[in-house]
Length: 496
Ligand SMILES: [Zn+2]
Image (cartoon, rainbow, N blue to C red; front, side, top):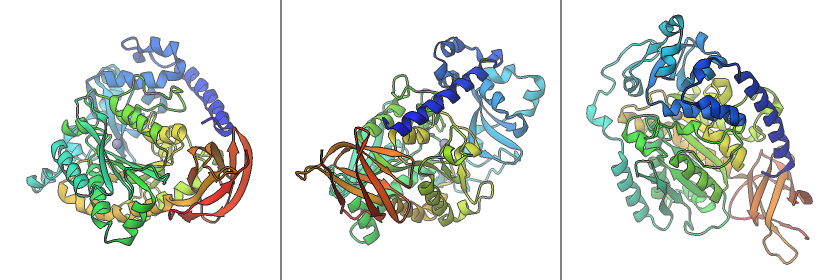
């Protein structure tokens, strides 16, 4: 983003990063493993990334329950503890490198309980009470009803082939073990770039958080099968382009693990705007690169990234506090009500009293550095949120239809709300579409860039004063009322 607003925010962030780095220099010596500290000192801005890399390169990650009293920020940073989603008032769970675990004091170590990760993932072990429920998978066959990679591939191909007029299956590239990172695109003119609003849904970036992967297949099936019979489905398919990536980490799924096959936590692997100003994919996981490249080719006005292990709607930011109005995501006034609506329409989410009836700001839950959500917003001007779909990461497949029923309305409502805002067609005196302009709106401090002609922007309801900028200079203002996109644009003619 070259806008003055982003430049100013970047400067503030850089100052904050410098303060953070100064603090971190005093961390205890156990941080120095395999020369990692040396690289930190030569690239201080990337210290946290190096810290993540340290953990990822350690193949012996131990899944543990940790008392909340131990979880100071310094302890988390110095040990490389990677928090998992679940929490209660007494404990958190997550991964510790075994080397770090061994270096803890006896008192600290005795408070940490090692867990059978597979049992927690499947819901057979409650990580907080340590109660076991061996009958969780009451029908073993049901556990096999998930689509493994081969079955998912066949199903996606079948869906694309049988609806080739509105669906297209492409691969974003190969995972590190050579599996395709499938993406289904759904739209009325699926082969054309009509300039319609684009939305992205990504699931299963954590390989063992699998409900979103199945819901993605349900979502695709619902869009395709209902297109010709349901007016609501037809409206969103005709007036937007929908990108669905059911599995960003197919290797992790096959291996029944969170991490990628080369032990990368993909949701800690993106450029973190508070600590890492290298917005490029060099040195990142192949799966991360695929998603970054996708964002280089498209501007997603809104996106959801599905996880499991909790049930909530998670708002930005994850990597920094949102406590002051100026610290919040600039379009929080748009996204927060969308999250509220999602949580309210999902009975399980609405009943989650660990959060504000199922809604939370990420940082207030726990800090995540290098997540896809914050990266997509900060560096790609998207409006990206994270949805946690199930308390048990890998529940019995009999739960899937419930999960779909609880989230289907939320997904459609989110999509429709994202299509509601301003829809401008910017032309010159001769009526030709204008390239490379920016649009600022009075109701947000965020200025967005557009490469050619059409500008979509999700806004709050009501009249919106929008200003077109070219080369940073305001050239025209217009007031239009927010509305759901129906294929028609408000035309703005500018002189150059
Ligand atoms: Zn996750």
